[in-house]
Structures are given as C-alpha cells and as structure tokens.
Image 1: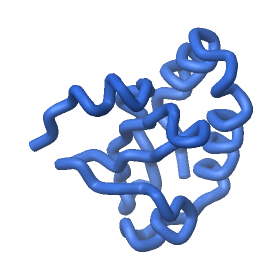
Image 2: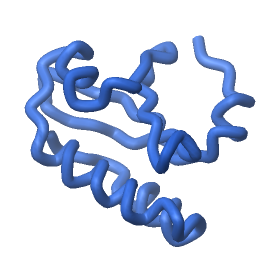
Image 3: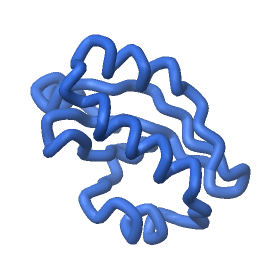
Length: 94
C-alpha cells in the first residue's frame, strides 16, 4: 500500500519518542500490505476499527491512534492524524 501522510507519523514519534518503534513497524507493515477490503486490514491489525470514513489503528500498546482513510482500489492509505488515546476519545466521527 502507498502511504500518504508519513510526515504526520514522523511528527508524532518526534513528539512522543516512546511511539517510534511501534509507528515505524506500522509504516513497514502497511507498506508491505495488499488490502482489498476492511477484512484484510483486520487480518493484519486485529484491533483496527471503523469510525465513519476512517480506519483507526491502535498503536504503541494502545497509547496512540492512527486515523487513516484507506482507498482499497488505489492501494493507498492516507494518514489524517496520529493522536493519543485521550485525544482520540474526544473525536466525534460521522
């Protein structure tokens, strides 16, 4: 999968250095993935969930969330935000 928004991931682990290993592993795993649907995402990341148009990935032992839009047809994952669990809980998804 092509990842758009790597800069958001980099910014997150610069701010939260304890997330660097988990976020780096997420980047490598997603780049190597070939997802056709959400079921494929769940085979790779069992804790992934839907929230409106977003796929939410639990990262760094459930301390962080990656919010992304997955375009299965184009094989692209667009990272829209990387946030703490606490900040994620404040989000309202439609």
